[in-house]
Length: 432
Image (cartoon, rainbow, N blue to C red; front, side, top):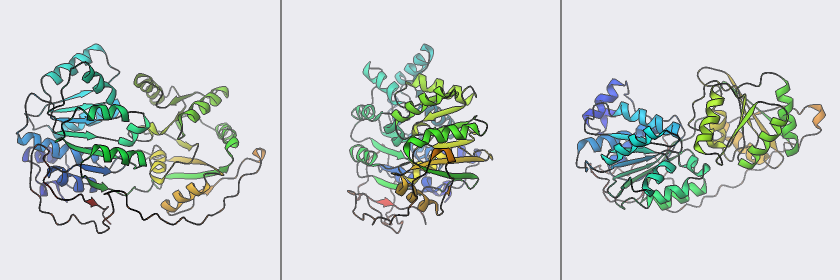
């Protein structure tokens, strides 16, 4: 479907033409009409599917059409990190090139006083679009720099990363400042129970748009070690003796394990650093700067850096533990083999994680090569195939798969100000 087939306004279409954007991605095709119709939207899609345009384009189009207060914040876009906030701000500048009457300001921490004053001026003048990280936005709210009582659009981007970084309480404090009439849009790459619970509390009768997770790039060389938990650090030591340590990320699902692995690696005199939610934004920025600049060889991290951070020259990704689901696995190993480079992904599969890894292999449609343990590490657990569990067919609240991918053949009626047009909640299934 082409952008010109929607009712995005001409100024937006002109900007898209200049940017050589013609065909919509699946997430854009399903979200843009619904947002233009005034529905709350829950989007489940991985990084790189075009979700930023999926929410910015319809919001900017409506703001440019007019009817919104000039002295108010009309849209808030929440980002988990400064880097992503900057990327959204850059996209905003491109899409809004011909929108003379639509202004924006980006608000995020880790800056000097001059930046703070610039943020303050933008908010006081009533920027139409406010792009912000939770901590910084909450600090402005607490001192009275910001009024969200007339906000018409609220976007929560990368909600699962917000959860990983401990921002959910901050988000709910911000949401309490929004009017009930505010149209709400939420995107997440994965949908664990806590994120679905957040969606229930945040959204009003949402349309759910789910785009199937893509398979990992074929050029990623995937392998696995089947092992017991105490053998994992010994495998790392063995791997690092084999050659070049540069540009390695080791992922673990728990920050306590990240801290322990980092401590053990430093005892092995490995040039490493750690990334997890206990670090401040400034500390995370410093860690990422050192790693991107090549000052650190190995980064041990939780899934905070599994999405949204563009580092093109990662050579090896090591899953110290098996990710919870296929989506997390794809995001983790997708940090390597980028920009036409080759890459390697190694997963440590403990005896308690065998069935979970078999589920990931089922998603991949192939069995990942198992590398034998070094002889001095002893015996490995047996990789026994287990019977697949029966699927749970229970429905979760009002969200359920319709199966046919239809949109209820509902006639769209263009609206302004995030007003709901009625109708029942509905779900768009991924295009087959």
